[in-house]
Length: 77
Image (tube, rainbow, N blue to C red; front, side, top):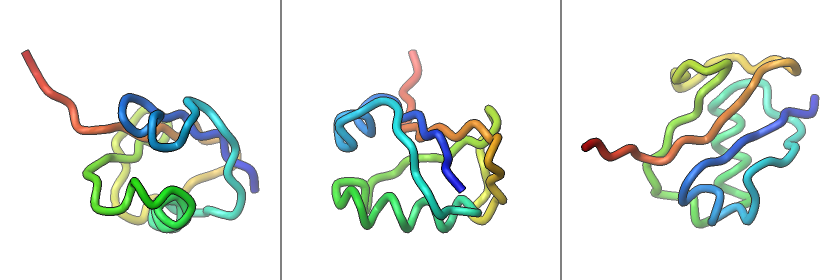
């Protein structure tokens, strides 16, 4: 299963791209593990995964048509 991933802010800098495809992740936990293995700069970093424009829980299912975004910490003003 190929997923389209969209990264924002510092995460896009770490992954050297705003959008790319990832294969093999069926849950957000699997995706996080795969991303942190591929991009060591994400390890220890606080970030959230959104699935279909909603902040996902630790082990949320991801489907092929899901929109997945990686969100760095936000600061308010």
